[in-house]
Length: 259
Ligand SMILES: [Zn+2]
Image 1: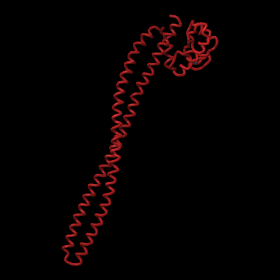
Image 2 (image 1 turned 135 degrees about the horizontal axis):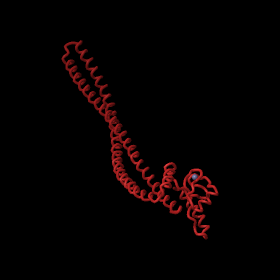
Image 3 (image 1 turned 90 degrees about the vertical axis):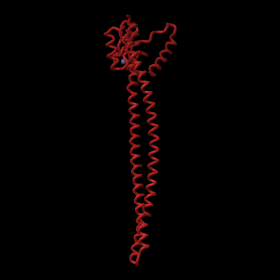
Image 4 (image 1 turned 120 degrees about the horizontal axis):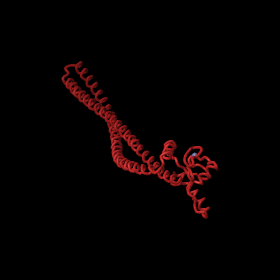
């Protein structure tokens, strides 16, 4: 295999590895995003439970106050009977005092009842609002969970397919070179980089002139003296295309930046 063929094989391998890396990253990110949404739903569920607790509490308070008002009403009736049955001034006054006292308590109880009804209304509104938000969040979560399942299966299939493809690509490369590629790749992400304008595009270090000459000769694989990545030059254009060549280099620069 010529050096050019070796570099071409490494490049195919690198393209596959980079694709695999981003697939793997997406695979890792999906469960994190889902977990975050599940936490939001749980938060809303707790909030809703608290709202329900407050609503129940206010409702109990209303029932108690109603019962108390009923009781005061019964006692007021009782005092009125006493007043009617009063046989002297003393009994009359005593019954009147009781009536006044129950009337005051009933009036106070009725004022309290208004506050309670207002509180119930506020609790109910908060509860309904949060219940709506909760069911929206929960429905959205279900959809996202379904989409995530589909996407994960898709990505997993891609990973599985590329494993076979990678093995067959890797089998074509000499083991020491493959190991060297994998060492750099695992450390720096990209083991093979283009030289543009005499610089390593991996670390932007200027490639020594002697190495550039060797790189152009293409007799062996050259590494960047700074980052150790393996270097390649874009195959040269036909001799009469000097201007186009400059244009191409720029276009390629833009591609590198975009990548
Ligand atoms: Zn470098």
